[in-house]
Length: 482
Image (cartoon, rainbow, N blue to C red; front, side):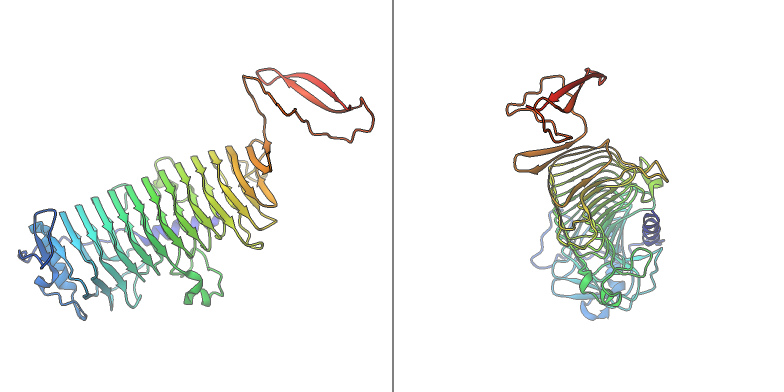
């Protein structure tokens, strides 16, 4: 649990609110739309070139782009970054108070170079949206060229009905794209789609409400980084100076989040990391080669900010999670389903479970998953049992049903866990009691496992206990050898 507390502390320090002064629209909006550009909003376009930006990769365009954003807030015009240009900036750009506009940058790059001071605990962003409504950011590339300061790529704060589509963020030292407010769920209704983040500390993150993170590519390729070589291929873990942690993060207090159809590769820690949130769907993602968990729901992550004090209302379905240090892991989670995933630990020496219902979970169903475990000493499916030093750690009301399991240890679970799984050709293995109000009809015969070898015809080899409808024992029926 020390690891969990370190993680919460690290994340809390990375995304505190940055104080930004009010913006005044000091420039008149340019009315001419760029050649070949039309708008669905009917409010016209304003080009960053009209306010003095050059886009040659050398000239400092910070002030010119900021003037364009200020003007757009007053004129209600959309903002255009011409394709093929590299706009060098040295400090945060803030889009404040924009409504019903598009910021289009297909083929254009914002390059952070010689960046102004930005520190852990109060990181700036290359592009910050604050108090915006119905704004769409399309196609822009953001790049930190020297990685000397702690910057997010795109940050959305105190805003509603936002879309980030087709944006690429490279090499920033905090989040690639982040929805974050000091008070969770302040930002509402955000779609982040078709984006790519590479070489960032966190790929895409949120503590908002109704946030959809879909069809993105998050890549860290940690094993091939200079940092990995510096640490001998073993990630130093949370609390370290690493620049590579989790792929997609949902922080405590978030509500109604969807993470779907993303590819997440070789993260420094977890592929998908979720703290104490409510109502989250993690579906149809492909997660490979992460140094910690593939998908982790951590209800002990900053529970004071959550609605329920833990993670509640979780659906994990249809994901492919391969060769992480723990494929799917649940901690302090209630009302969760883990259904139809394919998970695999392909290493005989990697100490990794397939699906783990870890400490303090309740009301969990793990069903119809395909779990392959190559490590003969690790279970494919794991449920936390009682701890003699702390009886609150056990996970309760857990069902493991109809999973296809390949491994020397199919499952490890408390006796109270209901377990049913395919254990061989036409063979089902179950743990727990079966209670039915109807008949049990076994057309092929009813087998009761022998406890002793029968050597004499008529000898009792097993006794079958008979129960009432309430579960009370009515006695025993002797089973004789024939």
